[in-house]
Amino acid sequence: MKADTSLGSYLRYGRTLAESGVTGLRDGSESYLHGQPLSEALSQSARASLSMAALGACAGLLQIYLTRRRGSIPKTIASGVVGSAIGFCVGFTLKNRELTASMARSALKQMGVVSDQHWLERHPIDYA
Image 1 (cartoon, rainbow, N blue to C red):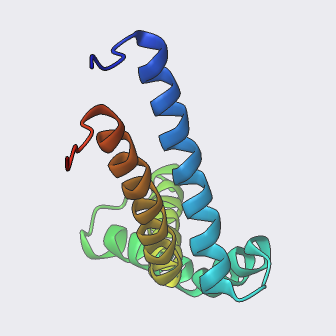
Image 2 (cartoon, one colour):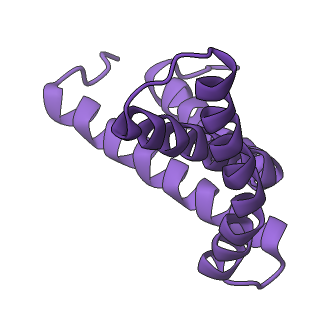
């Protein structure tokens, strides 16, 4: 028996794989959040990350002060903004690492099931 190797079959497999990944992401977030809306959890994480943003802004401003180069005011402000953005991103990432891990684990599990099913369709096992 010859397997179907047309472009359409690969596109169907890709679509099925992507849909299973999205389903896995949704299942992983629901299992981690226990009914709490994702937007609410992300907004709480964003609020909690503001302290890291303030710390990053201070680090950016302190860098200008410690180098003893009295630059222009725009450079000083830009350094503070960059430090704040880096601090916020680091804080937000750290606050959401368990949620991200749960979502990724569930998505990979769902995609593995679809991948195994696809492999078995292309390589049938005949026990007779």
